[in-house]
Image 1 (spheres, rainbow, N blue to C red):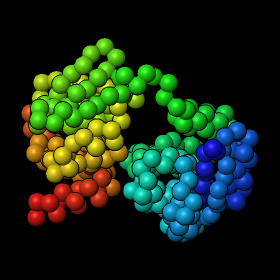
Image 2: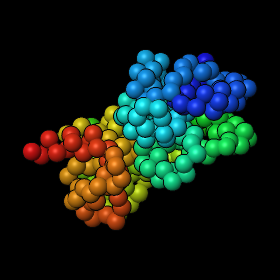
Image 3: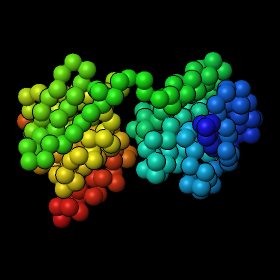
Image 4: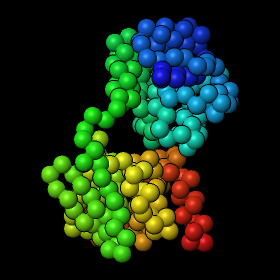
Length: 246
């Protein structure tokens, strides 16, 4: 199955160039094109693309706001900014940009990005043994298996869980446990009243939060007691927590 791509760019010449580069890469198909954010969001909802190439400055609206909405709709979509404005790069990554390409494009640079996307689509060839995370009922523990070890983690001791270097790390006050299981795998095993998926890369223990502070335009940073680590939380999840405690 081909990787679906949506193009959002108000310069016809640039859109044509990006289309030609993508069409020369096997495994990708362009499912839609437009020149403004309103139409882009409509197409995103309708076509459900895997990848979106978009400019920061559009004929109507702006790419950063557009990307923020798309990231909320589907955090797994790979948002790639293709723009002449390098100064927006920090904000782009706060809305989960997969990559940031500066005009005029280096064709090889774009090809490299497309190859990285294809690599991520490949099935995981690692043994399934190191992906097991199971909740042991009655013991209130997670059984976490890695390649070299098997650990029993007390659920109430978990402060946060995050993605790091293509692995998932579970943090307690004194220890950390690494597994190749996805955050979604672990999220399914946890109590939804105690743990929340605050961001595509984080799960946090609500009882361990001490403070939430602004961090960028659409993101907040979470501080915890008993551990010198932070987590990110989206504005949407931030509002959910406010309602929980109101």
